[in-house]
Length: 392
Image (cartoon, rainbow, N blue to C red; front, side, top):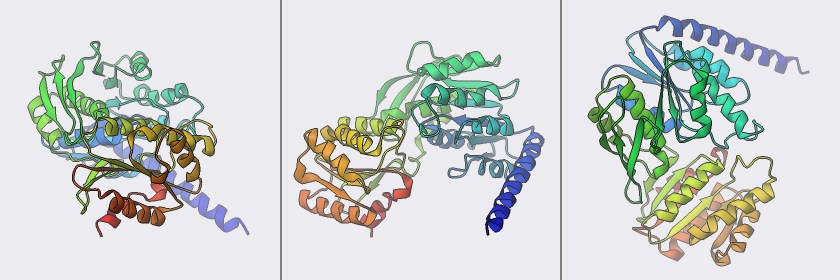
């Protein structure tokens, strides 16, 4: 009775191997295309978008579409490359031990970018050191005459410079980096604005982005460093970055009919939650409301304690909160224990119930211009649909 399922699995596996082999051969035929591969626990998608928009102003370029960044998606990305593409920006994600090594060997990048190492996918890795080893495979498997662009402020990423004899460029805020950021300003409603200081590749310039939050600085610096290493004009790069909107579901602001601004984020990692809280804490806003689903990457902490910790973390920053999920009561208890007004702490099992509670909160608090609604949760919870519901 299980033969059809086994046959289907074998067919899918064969198809994956076939497409991977074709992609490997096709990539080697695209020898005139400069392939830039990006990985990292956080910030890689936004870095990809920024760099692609810089490159395509100079020559035909191609990039990963949506989130085709795993063993299933990357072969298709490579097979869509064409001889007239001078640049290709490809995002690579680690979905388990050994996967990034396979992807790096398949892509064979000319330029390797590592944005950061953080506590993402801890359900698949035992420690942050194991995550760092996985990410380092991109540097180990780039082309001999390649270039590594690394986050010099992250000790796990900076150590990757020792794994290759190829040239490396470090970016960050520290004085030891070749591409550095200064005068960082990102207090909402202002978007991220920073100065890229002079390095070995380019003159310094001011970069005004549309991104929400100072934590995106590494994505901006990595894209800027990659463009500079390809001898592209700094002013043109800064202009291209200024025209890139936030990637959907990555601290994406949406203006609601009531006048308030909803900031959507579909990355449920604990590290990204901390970045969101920094934005909320510094924002020039009259009131702040939170809709929070489950979070990830807390190690092997049981869901009850994980959610209670999340509730404790967010309590100081919001006037009201809706926690979503079957175990949301634990987050609510943590928020109340940390000092939140119990009357403004609500729970909902799913998106539909959360929508009703959010609408009630908007009416009760009379939210409008100058107010912020943060929405964060795992993609399967579909909390991003709250924006569509508000927009009718």
